Length: 232
Image 1 (tube, one colour):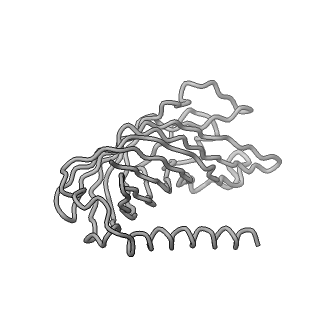
Image 2: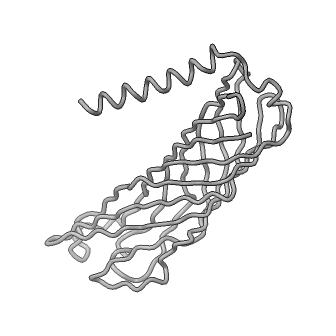
C-alpha cells in the first residue's frame, strides 16, 4: 500500500512538472541565445556490477555462487554547457564526485561471505544532447557520451586475507553513457531532471591472487543515475 502511495506521489510530481512546461507563461525567452551556461548537478545512483564468472566456478574451492547487490549513492558536481545550435548542446560535467557501493555475495558449501566495493569517483563526462524544439518552458532531450572515472577511495593497497575478503577495482576506468531528460525553464534558472545509464568498458577487476578474484574472469561496473541539473 505504501509503495502504491509513493508511486502516486511520483506520478503527480511528474504531471505537475510537465504541466508547468506546457501551460505556464514562457520564462527566460533569450536563454538559448546565450552560447555558454554554467551550473551544478546533484544526483542519486544505484550501482550494479556485471560479473563474468569462470566456467568451472561450481565446485572450485567449494564456491557455489557469486552474486551482487547495489546500495544507493549520491553525487555532486559542476556543469559547463555549450550551445551548438537550436537542437544540439555539448555538455561537460566536471568535476563530479560520486559515492558508489556494490556488494559481492559469495556462497560457499558451508558458509557465506559478503564484501563491499566502495568507491568515491571523481568523474568527467563529455556528452552530446539532442533536444526537441522548445514548447514554452519545456524541452525533451536524449544524450550520449563518454566518461572517465578515477576512484579516490581505491582499495587496491588495502590488506586482505582469506578471512578478510577485499575485492578491488582498478582506480582509472572508462565508459559510455546514454540517457534522457527534460529541460524546464523557470524565472531565474533552468532545471533538468534526467535519468542516465553508465557502463564501463572491459574488465575493471584488480586481481590479487585470492580466491575472491581468482574464481572470476572480470567485473564491469554499471550505474543508473537520477540527476537534477541547475543552470543559470
